[in-house]
Length: 465
Image (cartoon, rainbow, N blue to C red; front, side, top):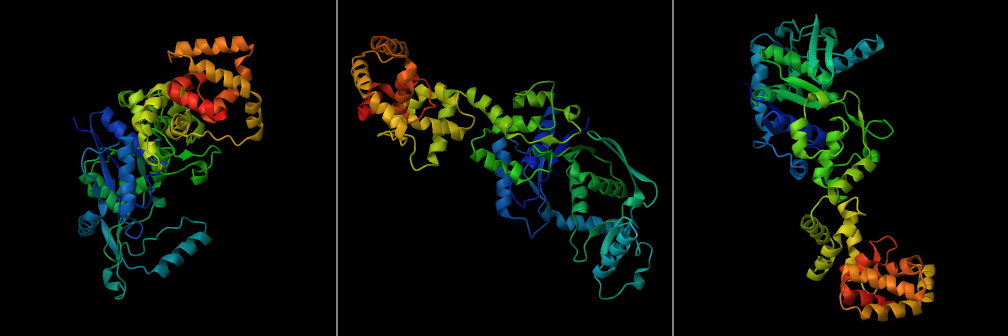
C-alpha cells in the first residue's frame, strides 16, 4: 500500500495567514490519520517578495500550532535548475515549444480578445511555427503544447467532478525568457519528486489545478488526489481581510489564544464531526478525513474562537497556567515574584473562570501582585467607601482577630460580622472588592482574601482606613 504524503507549500512573502494555517492543519491531520507523512515546502521562487523574516514567521507559526513536518523543509528556489531541465525535457519530446512573442504582441492579443468578448489568452501563434522565423533579438519562453480539444477532468475529493473545456486553457509558460521556471512547472515537478499523494489546498487554486493536470499528463505521471477546501470569509460573507481579523497566527498568540484552541477552532472552520465543537488533536487525528469537509465557505467568528479558548483555559492545570502566566509577565517590566506566584496559585480557579484569553488571565491576576496602594479614580466609588469607613474599621478589627485564615473560616466570620452589623453583603461587597483589588469584577471576596493572605488583605484594607 502506498504511503500517504501531504504537503503544505506557503510562499514566504508575509506572515502565516489564518487561512494558510488551516490548510497546514488539514494536511497534517490527513497525513496523521492515515499514518502517512506531512511535508513542508517553502515556495520562494518570487525572489523580489520572499524574505527570510517571512520564512521564520511561517516556521515559528507552524511550530506554535504543533504542525511540525516529518522531514526538513524543502526550499523551491534551490531546485530551479532541475525545474528548468524538466521544461527542456518536454521541449525535446515535442510536448513544449519556444514562443517568441513580444510583450506588445501579448498585450495586443489580450485587447483583441477583450473587444471580441473572448477569453484573454495566448492564441498559440508559435505553437507550430518554425523557429527559423524567430526574431533574433527576442529571448523566447517555453510553453506547454497543451491539448486544445476535448476537456480536462478533475475528480476533486471535496468539490466533486469538475470538467473544463481545453479550449478555455492556453499553452502556459513553463520557462521564462531569462531561463527561470514558472510557479506552475515548479509545483508539479516538486510534488512529483516529493512523492505527494494528496494535494489539499484552498479552492482558489482550482483553475491552477486544471493546468497542472495537463502538465502531469505531458510528463506521463500519475495524478495526486486533489481536495480543494472552500475559503474562509468574514462574518459579513465577504472575502476575508484584515478588518475581519485575518491576521497572522502570531497575532492570535499575542492576544492570548492557546495553540490547541486555535487548532480546534481552525478545524471547525470547514470540517465537522456531528455536533462536536470541542475536539482535541488526538480526536481530530482519529476522525479527520475528506468526508467531513464542507463545500461552502466558512465564516470567521472571533466570539466562537474566544469561547473555545476559554474552554481550554478552564481545563488547564494550575501548573500549566502558572507557566503561561510567567511568560505573559516576562513581557512586562515586572516579572512574577515568588510570593505573587503563591497568591496566584491559590486564586487561580477564580481567575480562570473570568478569562477568555491568556492576556485577560494575566490582567486579572494583577490583583494578586504588589500593587499597593490600591488606586481608585472614580469619585463616586471613593465617596461610597468613605461613607462606610466606620464599618470597614470594625471589619479590620474583626479580621485581625481571626487565627485560622481558611476559606470556611473567612466565609463564616464574614457572615457573622454582617449579621452583627445588620448588613447585607451587597451593601459593602462592591466597596470591599474595590479596596482589595481596585476592580468591581473580581473573584469572590473570600477567594480574594484567601489568595492575598491575612497580612496583605489587612494592609490593603488598612490603607483605606
